Length: 302
Image (tube, rainbow, N blue to C red; front, side, top):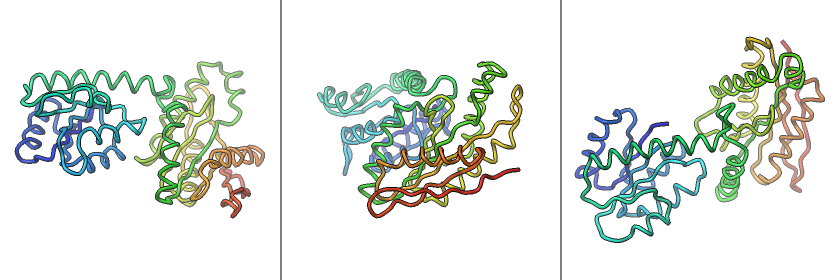
């Protein structure tokens, strides 16, 4: 994670020259520019940035409001450097979530050194937010993001889906091959299935051998398609010590009652286990009263 985002509305005078300077140091492929805080937040929805350099005074949304909005999403762990041409305001900048406050005109070497420090700080933050074994986000980070997605769904009435799955007979893996082999299965499963998520999705180690994929904007058809691809990829894979491993999947979608979403997916996963494992089960659409029925698909076998 080494992407750098620079936000400044003075495109020709400040933004473009600064992008060139930073590109020479950090590589042009790692630098992205935005001429407004609004567009910068849109970029941050689909991509994670290790360092954000933002101007304070901008039209529509200033650097302080941008910083607050950026920090509102718990997966935005990037180090924020705020630039200002005026005196004072340091306390407000730091309170808004900036990590450091630079006054203009600044020395480019000083700014580069601060960015290098920011890259290190962000790497440490990411390590603390992710599971050390699989590299996936931990459940506590998911819960904060899920609260934001609930608010977004209620505001925009956009769909939200989850795929909850766990590895079948995982206790037998540990008992037969040892916990080291079990750990390798968890790690390799995470690495394998990361390839099948969309940029907007969040992949989480939910606990033990259980994983969760949060899919903003996905209807049940897309969620089922992704779950089936995950199941198929795992079936085709061979683990060096263990051989073949399967998983059971529960899928749920909501457009009305997001607070029941996880429990519906969990129940669908339970039905997948009862249906013989190595299959995908879809929770029925929410009832008008806010409850949920259940619809199972036949286990898919090779």
